[in-house]
Length: 373
Image (cartoon, rainbow, N blue to C red):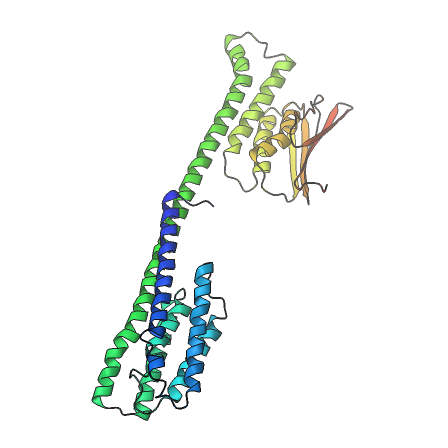
């Protein structure tokens, strides 16, 4: 379904804002990792050094992968959860080998970097995932301070102050992404509603135009007949006139039936046309077997036109059968009427007819599935 101009504009604007936010998060993360290079300036503090190098390399690799995804305008695949676990493992490795008292100090480089790793990996997911990740990060930091110490008031105050940035800013980024996604959902719903309204209006206009054309065709066929009856210029006792009257009456009933809401429009239209024949004393037997798909009005009209002509001109009886088989819908009638014109006029149905001993058999078939080439 094509988008409306307003919905499309809002959707594109929201996408640009989300991409801009993602790029901003990437820049902030790179800045936190590389500037002011707290990791490099404290190499002499780390004993041993390899755990910090491994952890730092893991987080840099995640940032590099995010940069590639941003350039390609792709989101993280399902592997994000494994990468998230690896990032947490890298933080635990770094913290495990930090010397006593170095936690939440300038040497604790992972304290400020890990939260942004969560934003990178969870920006397009539910905000609760990011909240849980940041809570886990904060709980690990508090546990490290309490276990290895010193848990003095100065250290705890430093932890609280630092958490405003290490937890607060990543969380704010997640909240901003959530707000933008809600804007995108609202824009998409507005676009769909506008398109549905336009489609409904277009369908209504087309149906109205179709009915106008049908009434115009009916007027051209029935008007001379009605005018002749009104002016008494035609003989109502003539067989040809009665034949024309019966056919036009049946067509009118079918036209009115086309606007009805029925579970089976094809059978419904045949039933309405059969009422005309019944009123003039013709016994009509209508039977439907099988099933068939929904069909356009033009197909139903092509299927019923010869049948309506036969039953409306029958003398005493007409037996109608509708059969639906896989791939084919067949409508046939046996009536004591004159031969019926089988010219389909290029319609998508096949008409067959046989006249013998005063009875006429007519079969109209429509192939519901195209034949293999």
